[in-house]
Amino acid sequence: MPKAYVIGYKSRTLPDDAGKVDVDFSARLEDAYAWEKERAETECRILDHFRVEMATKKGMKHTCEGFKVVERTPGSFVVFCEIPFKPDDW
Image (cartoon, rainbow, N blue to C red):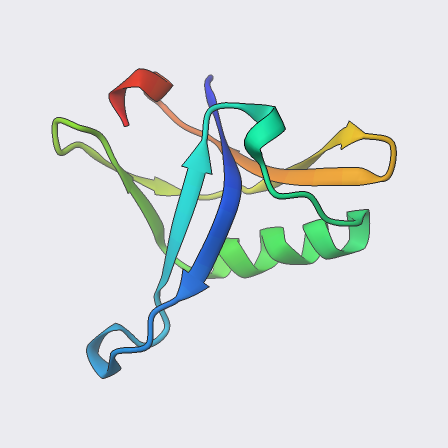
């Protein structure tokens, strides 16, 4: 399954959107934001808490869950989730 790597996210501030986050993804490992391992694992739990949705260009929505950590370089860990469509579609 293709992977969507987290390159950043932020909480929404409008009252109607409280408790929601917007997540930016990349299909490229080298674009992903990197943390130390413990922090990356914490970020996975945080993102799993939210119902992060990703939409394709054609409007298909996927709820991202099961965020995982992978080591990109020694001491540098990134967060990703698997998605059921090709990166060219989002």
